[in-house]
Amino acid sequence: MVTIRRSVKYPESTDSYRIGQRPRVRVSIADYGVGNLHSIRKALELAGARPVVESNMRNLLDADVIVFPGVGAFDAAMRKLDGYRDIVLDRLNAGTPCLGICIGAQILFEGSEEGEMPGLGLIKGRVVQLPAKRVPHMGWNEVRSDDRMFENVPSPYFYFAHSYCARPEEDATRGTTDYEGEFPSVFRKKNVLGVQFHPEKSSASGAAFLRNYVKYLEEKL
Image 1 (tube, rainbow, N blue to C red):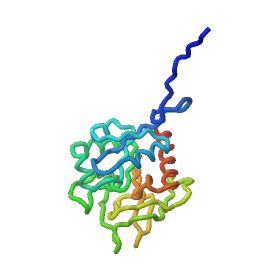
Image 2 (cartoon, rainbow, N blue to C red):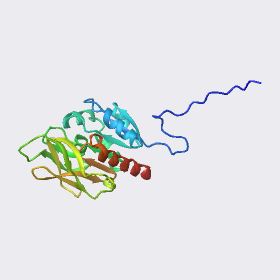
Image 3 (tube, helix red, strand yellow):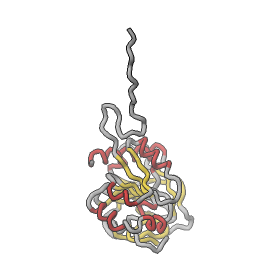
Image 4 (cartoon, rainbow, N blue to C red):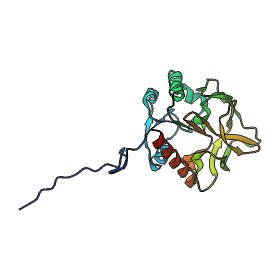
């Protein structure tokens, strides 16, 4: 007697779940149309999320989690969001979790010396040029923060690449860094977190930071 076994399709590594595990958190990465988003997409996937790159900003309106990546310039990012700015801001004010990285953190503010377009305005304050003789600020530097996203991070050093920094005019600073003077490098308001460094380029520390962030999302959603 011959037994015929039917083939079984198991979930691929990019599927939203694993057998016996809860579904992965779906994270929408805003594609400003500038640069390669492979690094942040891969880093979020390794941290346990299910990242999706969205080139149509309209899709952010239905996102469970929004990530504004650290690619591009201020005006280029806001131009891509043109027409959706107020609705996205409403979503963030209503509690939609969001992570802003580098330029993605800067667009959370009201405006920037780098460009002319208004930012999202979630956080009061503006983005200014780094008051340093050597710009851009590129390389590894220490982040001093007691935010829960830095729990069990193996090193406080993260990778930076920027010429501008944000100056909040409200209580939103959750971490600082020194580069020829201290500047805010971590921001939080409501469920929105902004970081001036690049976790996706920060080796083991960045990976631990993103794992903490995904764990936080799993508790929220």
